[in-house]
Image (cartoon, rainbow, N blue to C red; front, side, top):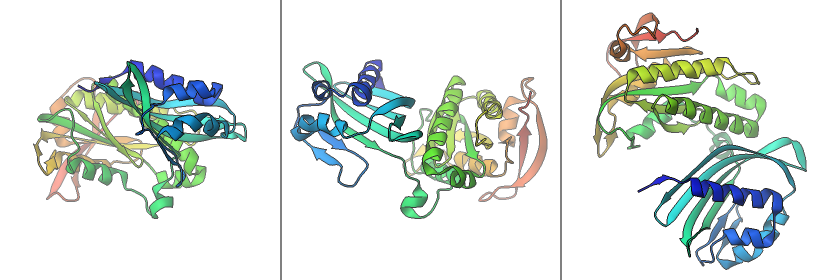
Amino acid sequence: MIEPSPELMAVSRRWFQAVTVTRKDSELQNFLSTSAYLRFIGTAENERWFGPAVRQAIGDHFHEVPTIFKTEEILGEAFENGPVGWCCFLHKFWFETRPDDPVTFRTTLVFALEDGSWKIVQRHASTPVANQIIIGNEHSAIQALSDAAQQGFALGQREGLASVMFTDIVDSATLAGAVGDRRWSALVATHFVDLRQIIEAHQGQFVKSLGDGTMSSFSSAKQALSAAIDIQRHMQNQTSEPTLALRIGLHTGDVVQSDDDFFGNVVNKAARVTAAARPDTIRLSGETRAMVGNHPDFRFSDAQATHLKGFDGDHLTHELAWRA
């Protein structure tokens, strides 16, 4: 059974401490497997090292890295399943060679139990690079998330009613161009962490992030609307620039799973409702509105008969008031 692993979180954080602060050869080596299957992969094309040579040269490798005088953990997760475990981290590192321009690193560590101790058998670290640079075009976050769900991305909830919520950063391409890819990647990563915490606090499941959008699912429409309100209020309290604006959309429907389809039209309609939302607003389908009835916690306005691409006829949508 896969379960979160506080033990591996602690081991991983000691590894990063050894990498960024102490950098003692014996300490670094002690984290690594003695197996011939040890793998160490970095960002550059030729940064692929295998087997015992990695363990022998690990100290020399990190001594080549400039001094890191400050670190910030943006995201950290660890899991285990029997004798195997893994973690993923997102960090910002400030190097002495660039003290005012932190570098964002993504790291995945895979562990195996060796003689009762967790040892790293694979490490993969890289710096985020925008798809615009690599493949020459950007993702459309909402539609891409919708497509991912339709291609079989499984949620914990397999059947019954689900309220699906999308968030999308407004004018993200303009903002990314203004601040630069590296800073934008770090900013969006932090944004996703904040949204995940709010969604999970309302018993929702953070399903997926892609580009600058997120998709989540709730078994309760009330919980979904409460999460959407808290997200917009969180965005309103931003103090640093650039200030992000979100459009949020929700739709509620019956979850259906088959070999080639997950959710059916629920995800697609939620995506289309989101696309119809204005910046800094929460838009929801008539079905989601009906689920909460006249609940005193929610106020609705701007009811519209809206044409949703891919759906016949007009569909009633509402705006959810969120400002206190």
